Length: 139
Image (cartoon, rainbow, N blue to C red; front, top):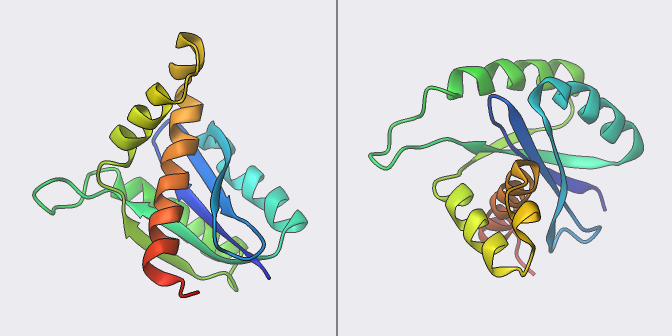
């Protein structure tokens, strides 16, 4: 079964997560610099079968969309051009960074590991993907 990929987009860094082969569990894939996102996706798509991509929708507490959405839309256009057969869905990403930071702090990692911003982005992408799976996948 193809995987589902999730992207937690940021201006500087981006987190990625993927499902297992049965699309039940989300696992962290990588935290990368955003400038490397398209080359990363190109290699990943060559090596893996991907059913869809889930991209976080940066919604503020009042329900409005964050200004970073403009940058995300630019990347969505690039991704659609490169991989036109892979649909993209969006999911509200409110609080994922805070929840990820809390989860990392409880994980027993040392201070240097807890301060790793790439890890935070990867865990955030994992939360986005697991939220999607919990809402949309019926066992």
